[in-house]
Every structure is written in structure tokens, then in C-alpha cells.
Amino acid sequence: MKLLFSLLAIFTLSKMFAQFSYKKGDVVADFSFKKILNNTDLASSLKALQNEITVIDFFGTWCIPCVRALPHLKELQSEYESKVTIILVSNEEEQKLSRFIDARKPFSFPVVVDNSDNFISLFQPPSYPYTIVLNKQGKIIDVTDAASLKSEDIKEWLKQKNQDTSVLSAIIIKPMSNLEITKSSNSLVNLSQQFIYAARTGESVGSRVMKLKELSYDKLKNGLTSDDEKKAFWINLYNGYTQMILKAAPGKYKDRGKFFKSKQIEVAGRMFSLDDIEHGILRYSKIKWSLGHLNKLFPGRTEKDLRVDKLDYRIHFALNCGAKSCPPIAFYNPENINQQLDLATKAYLAGEAEYDSQNNVVHLPALMNWFRRDFGGKKKMKLLLKKIQIIPEESNPKIKFKKYDWDLFLDHYKTNV
Image (cartoon, rainbow, N blue to C red):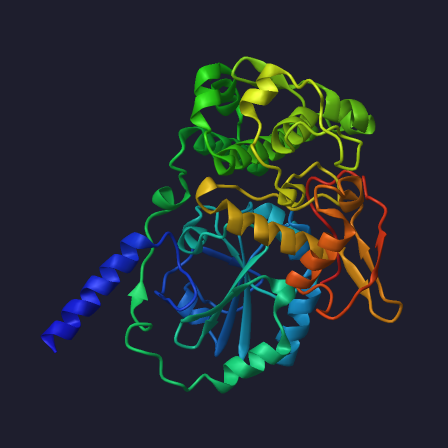
């Protein structure tokens, strides 16, 4: 018996130091939170809100797929009213969340206001949308996104509610602190994370902008050695500067060609445009309007120094250009960027791709047409859609491309929930 407890203690400690956040199979420790909106109960802790099945949806009013999934969550809540609790968690300001709720009354879900990132630090969503499902014992039984939650899965989980969990899986794991979790080991990427966080939340970005300007060029060139580091750094900067520039001067978006071509981003003494970052650095010197087929014959020295070694089509689902049809904003980290980009891809296509089984047609977002060679052509697009379960495995639909929605979108995406 003593040996068993020793083994359990070693297992628990190894889990605590090896993992960055809660994952599937862990049992979540109870914790309290200060503010919860749209809730008549006096609940102030996770345990007080828990039900036979508890869905924790990490949510942002800026996240289009998150908002679009709310009607689906409402249907599930209505179907399993007494057995399932759905909680939204956001680190946005209480006033903004209250306006969002008031515009959609009657609103179906309690919303935890997590301004200090206490709730978020425990689960560390790598990108949005991100959804955790707990059973009655607080064990994580699924990690998914809200749109992918199915009634059949909930029925199955409810059937399993009385099954005993194993001794090891019942160990309560407490993750490391938020600082240890979110801070990239790469100082340049960490600076880009700080910058996009400030740009998205409305904090002052002045000090981060100055640090980016004052970087030495050699540090920039030599400090991002892998493609994962380069993708994380430049995606964060692209998204952060888009938010910062358009929030300060939305009128710049009227001339979109000029907006994307203007060299208005200073990093390490060099001036970059959004096009420079996207097509020069992240797309390995591709010519913008060539459907992804053509590369620049003579890219500049700076571009050659900083660009990735291999183009990753998933960046198209990560770059946020300020329009309604752009992918949701997320914070990227080289340590788990492949998981983040996979989630961004699935989230974007779940919200934008539309499969018409009767006419055997799938409608895809316009950006997949603009950069079709990046995706490997239509054949590879279909394989991707099957992989993420947008179309059935045995299907072979015709592909049509949708019109791009260029309406400026920096804040709310309205829908009736």
C-alpha cells in the first residue's frame, strides 16, 4: 500500500510539472471566481455550477465561430435542461459583455467574467473557439469546440455518469501558474504575444511598439530560427497591428489595397506592410495575386533573411485582416502552434464552409480560391474537408467559392441567441 501511494505521488508530481494545462482525463480542482453575469443563483465557484455534464466554452464577442455556435449550444441546453450546464468564460470587460448579453435577451447562459485570466490560466485555450466538457466528478471527458458538440455524445456521456473512474484518472491535477504557461520560451515571440494581447484588449501598446522598433536586426534574424517561431511571431504581429491600426483609424480600410500595401509596421528598424508579412515572410515570397502559383524572382534581402522555409496553408486561417470573413484572432505560441493552427483551420471552415448534399456542392471561403495552390488545389481541399468532417468520406462534391465579406469587423458579431 505504501508503495502504491508513493507511485501515485510520483505520478501526480510528474503530471504537475510535465503539463502546461488541464487536458482530457484530468479531474479539475474546484476554484472560485469573482464575477458571473446572467446568473440568478449565488454560485461563485465551479463546483457550485457543475451539473451531470458541464460545458465550459471559452468565448469572445470578437470570435465569430464562438458567437455563431451559441444557437447550437442553446438547443443542447434546452434538450438537456436539468442535466447539462453550459458556462461561457471571457476575459473581456464586464461592460462589453453586459452590452452583448443585453442585445440578445433572453440570453441562455451564465458568463464568467475572467478579467484576471484566473479561469483561462487553468485550461490555457490555445486558440478560440475552445470548449471543455466535464462529467459530474469534474473529469474532463472531451476537449472540442462548441459547434462540434453533438446531442448523441451528451447522451452517451450521461449513460456513463455512474461508471467508476480509475484511481490514477481521479487524481486532481493543478496546473502551473498563468505566467509559466503563457510565456513563450522565445523572448521575441513573448513580446509579440504581449503586443497582440494589448492590441486586442485595448491596453496601451506604446511600450511594446517601441520595443519592436528598437530590436536589433541581428536579434530579429537570429532569434527566430525555426518555422514555428517565425509563424508565431509574425502571425501575432500581423493580427495585433491590424487591430491597432484599424481601431485608431478605421477610415484606412476604405482603400483596402493601399491599407495592405502601406509600410506602416516598424520592426527592428525595417518597415513592413501587412502584405510583406503575409506574402513575403509567411508565404515564402509568393506573388500575391497568382493563385499561389508564382514566387517572386528577386525577393529582397530582408525578406530572404526572415521568411519561413516552408509555406503552411493553415496561416490563411490564422491571419485576421479586420473583415467579417477573416479568421478569429488567437494568440500563437511556437510550443504548440501546430495544435493551434489545426484548431484555427477547423474553426474557420466550420463557420464558413457549407456542404449541400442534395446538389453535391460544397461552398468554400473565397480565400481558398485566391490562394488555391497553397492548399494543393481542389483535390487536396476535399481531402482537408473530409479530415475535419465537413464533407462525408465517400463524397466527391463540386467546389464553389463564396464571395468574401470585406465589411470591417473589429468588435461584435451580432446574432440572436
